[in-house]
Length: 257
Image 1 (cartoon, rainbow, N blue to C red):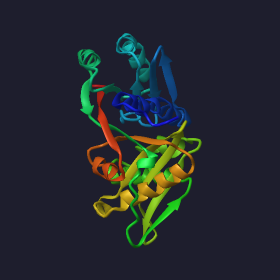
Image 2 (image 1 turned 135 degrees about the vertical axis):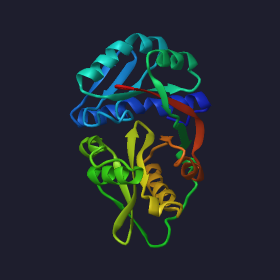
Image 3 (image 1 turned 45 degrees about the vertical axis):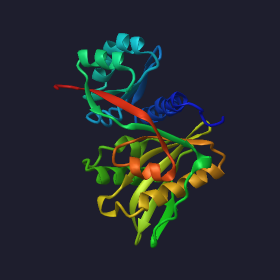
Image 4 (image 1 turned 90 degrees about the vertical axis):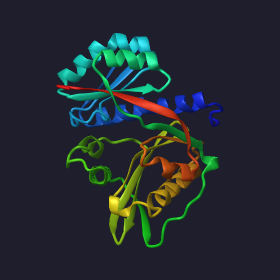
């Protein structure tokens, strides 16, 4: 598949990889995927209070709104206290319907992507070692530490196998300070679980680690790469050549809120 031509096609590409990615995490950690029509809900009881793991994706806003009660019941039955719906920023009608149903805007990550032929190469800083190993637990632990979450909050990531993923770590003096995974979705290299410890930020470490991982993806024959970016990560990705294709509005429903 060639790289998308329009911004809309890029957004569609980013969104296309999200349901299967979250589905692997749900099912691989003992949860499930609830599907109805064009609605897909990843149900992750291992993370009952982390809505980002319990994510809902949809193709048609009216179908989503019609399925909200069934989706809410599925999460309730699984003991999940917080879940979120990913809404493209242009879909204001669905956003308004979610607000009426008790959801609130929780986060606004960005859809980002690029053709791997456009990768801007960056070398690793001096003293940095890059290691590749299938260490889901290590990737999960580093994410918890980097983002200030309690131990165990990323247990689903630690437990769920994702066939084809390549997991990378940047190490200083033998200690892992940054990590990420690259998961294959058709010819797209989907970057997941990027994290860098606070004391190792602003030193080019994450940029060098990503450049290494993306070079490998390009050599493996992938044509594109996509991700969802936080505000913190966006400058790193732009240095590598990623383009911003708009916001995803995460509308969360939290029990007791």
